[in-house]
Length: 121
Image 1 (cartoon, rainbow, N blue to C red):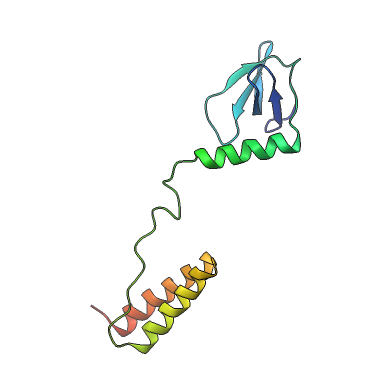
Image 2 (image 1 turned 180 degrees about the vertical axis):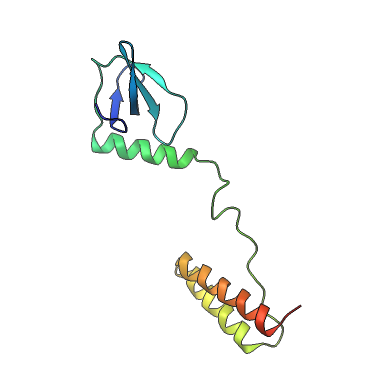
């Protein structure tokens, strides 16, 4: 077995990522990371597509909410009376409405750049 192979362990009813062999046991780690466990290599089988997908979704749902976009700074605010600032805010709102988070971030970057150049504090 190759390290990283996803295997189904019927003893724990869990899909795990094969790590290595330890004596007579196979070492598996939960998808997404976590504490390894020992499994009987004779009872393991390759995980089905549905089992792999389910394990990946479970790992994503349990991921701590400390990564992006959860720790993003507050969006920049437009300078009062500046048409360029308002145009960039409208771009940001349209991107957010369309759930185009990349374009939303781009609009924020452009607004911060514009503010630092045109409206220095």
